[in-house]
Image 1: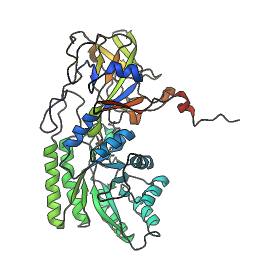
Image 2 (image 1 turned 90 degrees about the vertical axis):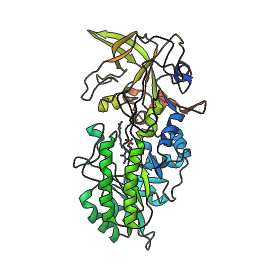
Image 3 (image 1 turned 120 degrees about the vertical axis):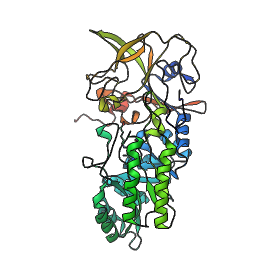
Image 4 (image 1 turned 180 degrees about the vertical axis):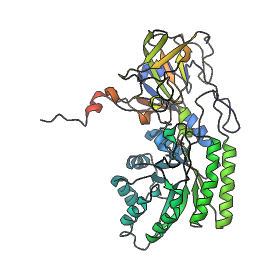
Length: 446
Ligand code: LLP
């Protein structure tokens, strides 16, 4: 289904019918594990990791998909990891990452230290990438009694004064964003760090998620300027995440080579100034996992509302929140019931695709916004999908990033099961929650 490598301006084909995921029949997966069900294709993750091989460090933003098996797979593929919370630090440990090393295996990047994350960073010497000036003093206060004469290393996440994302909600730069240290406050932060005996060894910028090459390219100049302000203590620069992935056929794959070249030139200029090598990091989440993930659901009702025809699934925004949050578009396909032959990539060649109709696809929740085919602002959109019957399966595609990690128990719906298909084996990597799981921390007062 991918008509390209990641370099060059190529696009990706999506089919409205699918019989297989990673060579396994979808119907069989649904029969064995039930629906709704998240399925990840390990080979697709490996391909995307491969694309980024030119960068010195690929640091996975695990917030995109933090199932232990996925983080473990990404670790075995050679990536390091980013953690934004105490929970993500624990996950990184559980997936096999060491606390310390050069480059640091785990970096804690956040705009605050809550008490638990500060404890973990201090106790395990996790490398901190600070996104607020207040964090400098908070860290120093905890470190100095333990290591009075040692300069501890920090990196700074800088808000360069501009940002861009696929939605205003995922734009992390500029004055309206809470993220990072404002670029004009760098000199003051350097003074603070020096006073506290902290050494700034790196600069990091992440301007938003789901942005594009044009905006990403502007970061190089801003980062270079900041790194020069900091000076030769800088040994690493991080381009952040934000790499876009295709959700529609018209979306072009990002030209990774061109992006790397831009950063490499920036790195080289800084190396010339500082007279020592610099490590170039990238911090993708979506790019590594989005295309690997599929949400499989069953059509449980088909009904007309005046001129509109609805397919209602057993998955809702409790399972995949991106459409209701951002009006995000996900490709969708229907699994034919006739056992039709499929092509190698999961598209269906055996059944004509002419029997299509305009439908609205929604879920089971008691909330009108529980619609997968919607635009930003909640306006319902139509999708051309094959004619289908109750009991047929629908696959919501490109759901591997910010899919299951943003799932909730709204309407007392258990979290779905997750599967990883890798090297010809299907692994259950998270079992479906039970009703007992749902209420296990609740008590009725006596
Ligand atoms: N680094 C930092 C500091 C970040 O805040 C993020 C994402 C990333 C890296 C990874 O960004 P990516 O490569 O995945 O674009 N829930 C939203 C996305 C929120 C992203 C939050 N931060 C969505 O579903 O689109």
